[in-house]
Amino acid sequence: MEPIGYVFLGVIAAAALLQAAILVAVLVGARRLARVTSARVDALERELRPHLARVGEVADGIARLSDRAQRQFTDVESAIGDATDRVRRTGDVVERAVRQPAGAFAAALVFTVARRLLARRAARAGSAPEVA
Image (cartoon, rainbow, N blue to C red):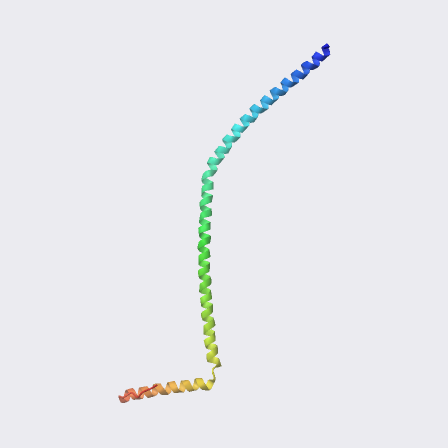
């Protein structure tokens, strides 16, 4: 082999050694970076753990509050439905009373007043007549 071949072979060997040294340096740096990063992540986890626990407690409280509000909404909805039914029924009774013929209403009123007057007179006289 010629001397120039040895020179190229030496350059190739030197380049390979340089690459190996660079790779070792990169690996050492990456290992240090991984240790530092791991330590920072652990510190961050220790610092955030109480806050995350508090967030969990708040979420549980919100869930309980939501359940309670839903139950109360159901109760309010039921009460409103009952009140609406009562108002409707009262309206029906008033409508029937208004639609009732005036003569029948007046006759019922006259008979009621007459019956009460007769009962009072009989009570004053001492003997109560039979009132049906």
